[in-house]
Image (cartoon, rainbow, N blue to C red):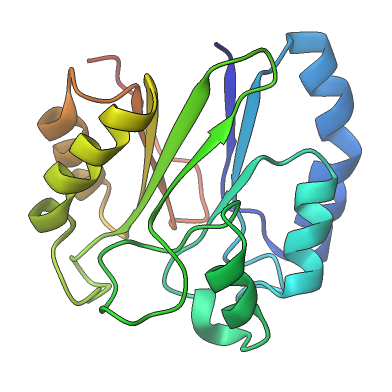
Length: 187
């Protein structure tokens, strides 16, 4: 299965570029599933329902978010109602939405997407390491392909999560830094 992960879509220029580029790229590369981090898609400050719907209509299968998800209040009902958008699972109980979703891939099979927020410098409320085992166990019951997006400041926290989940998930990716980092690893 070919999965494309795009992070972080930032503002109107990022949205426009993604939506212009995505269809041709997915066709050329036979992409089966697209995940995009959209927490800064509304001019660098959260995501709106309209923007989320536009990304989903444009070919994104799942939108992950992070610490800026709460900046646009109109997204709250959409987070609660639509399974194609996730917020960090380690946010406080009662927060709108979900931190795990399972969606069908284009050529068959299911993909589980887990969204977590890092603890270092972001103060997510609960360490992602405290709940990730339960989420991965749940995801393993629902899908063979499991993608974890750790939205975190410190790349070391993302690398640690990758090592911790090695052999249990398909991939751990990291978002939030807004710049490319050289932390890619095959474990």
